[in-house]
Image (cartoon, rainbow, N blue to C red):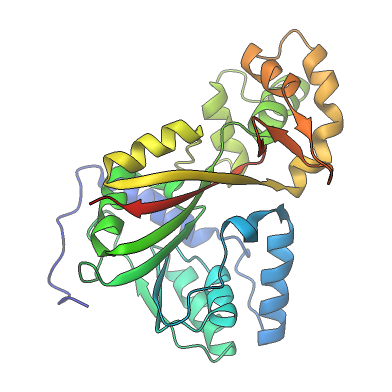
Length: 299
């Protein structure tokens, strides 16, 4: 790790960085639950993955034996638990901007007696405190769509990755039941909420709390373009469907029948197909909120 004095100056938009860090200190995916045993922690890891059909296959935690692994935006340690129990890493690192989540992750990893370096990031400082080309694998799930400087952060992740390294990313997927049925129909039409907002702005209010400062949503082509601008090749590997999306699919015909539904949402719902497991698909991929990608450094 480089000396602590090696840092970038905060960006001009420091207020949004501070607001984001403050929000994620107050809110995290476990609602600050304190685990009391490794068994409880691991059971929660498995339960949460099961709430998103296909997630763990798209964002695996196994297969990283002997490698340096970074969980960027590790939160309260959910996927760190996965790597600690499913892979024998040579070095496991978790980074997050939330002091509360870093503390929770540290306590949780202690329950598993798993060596892990936990790094608290400074809001607005883009440069990551790791040496260039020092990491084999980066995992970042549900994080990048919340960042003020997405391209800058991706470039830093590109810098710390080895030339033969790789990164798996989950960001919110625009071609999803969440956006086109839950937001476009159930929230905006049935409930009458967010009618003064664009569909993307309304989406932001429905995922991680109404006060979440930033929650972007991407078509696959859009995120791939961003990743390429940061020095990666990128492949959309599929999306995971949330339990919530699966439960509301019975409303899709009512939505299609409603003249107030945006045409793009109607076309999306009309184009859905269903596989042998009953999961809905759009243009060959499951139509879920969790869009997943495999990135590799260019050059």
